[in-house]
Length: 502
Ligand code: HEM
Image (cartoon, rainbow, N blue to C red; front, side, top):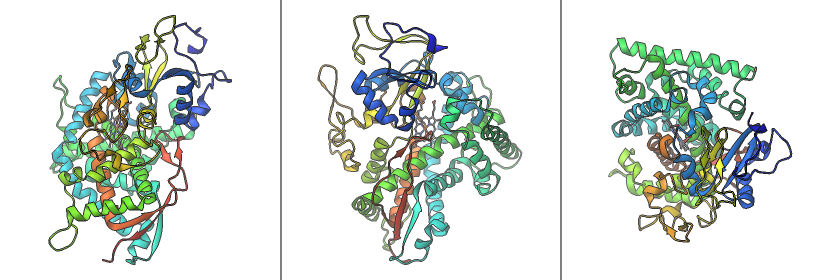
């Protein structure tokens, strides 16, 4: 429909392409980062490309991030952009299947479950799960031999995926999920996950077996959670720290409590939202630590200095401490700068929207107008990798975040505004503002609510691993952009050896 609309003089520049419907799908799909950098050189920060029949207007840089993520949700709409992908997986009545006001209430309910009290209770559980895994999983045979000269290897993504689901289910998801993880639950999860691909995003209804499996898995998964909720409603509820318990106590502003199905579907949404994002980030972090052993040693030293008990042994982590280890924090921050798991954040355009002159200079026909029916796309990864913003932007350097003045003065070159004035993004703005060059968790209304949990999960993971072993790899792999969440390409095997004898 949109392709036959004639171009208007105020349309943003369109990326040149040979193939009418396919447009730039191949360049974008293979390497969105290079595609965007190339287009930025040719067309500036705002341009439109054709993606399998859709018109997508990209807005780059901190101002582009602000334009898309700070835009009104009634005009730049997330439901219209995502529901065909997410509703078959999460289910009805939640997230993008409901009007934005309802989802915003649901986000608040989830925040209750992510309270500091709950997070505090999770640290020990996460640490336990990871230690158990290292002590028993086949990937860590060399570690289990208790010999510091024995090197082994593990595929970082496989291991991180397992650790992420183990730790998330032990904490947020609750005991019943954790107990079923090696049984039916894993199968439903895998089938649902096969429905979370770029193919499903581009083509919501293909007659493929994987789509049918996804739909069957959704029903089973939803029933699985509903059974848990029903049992809990009738029995003693001693699950005070998990998300199901928190959701069972919430009420909408209207006074209505959540239905069992709504709780079940929110639980699926949380599972999916946290799984690949955290496992990808954990993988990239371990790969970089392995490629920079001196940082592995410095992280280990940080652990020794902070956690050696009077008996000379390392004691367990606590929530407050994990949050306050500067190098550990910088390692996660820097990893998310170079490898934000989500490279494209999209919205559907419900009404014509003028592009601010400060973002794209007007032509003789006036300011550009993003036409109704297009999609808009923000890619914070572009501003996070922009050499004009960051010193040695291609270099993974956690120390760039260790800034004694408390602002990111050494973290990146000051960003210059349109008048050539320096814009100072303090740490708060760096992570929270809609106009910021650093937004791995998005910004604005749809900003991530899992950030604290993800930091805790990743911080505990990295701490536990560097305490236990040394890591080594020749080279950090390239990005694989063919999955919804950006993963490292294979091979991605990290060599490890035990740090010390028991
Ligand atoms: C939204 C990134 C972990 C739950 C987002 C968005 C990003 C993001 C970029 C914005 C999407 C948009 O604007 O369209 C990440 C990263 C994570 C992570 C990098 C880990 C390293 C988690 C976890 C949870 C979670 C662990 C759940 C516990 C959510 C939710 C939203 C969200 C509920 C809101 C979606 C919306 O309002 O439309 N995340 N996320 N995320 N994330 Fe995360």
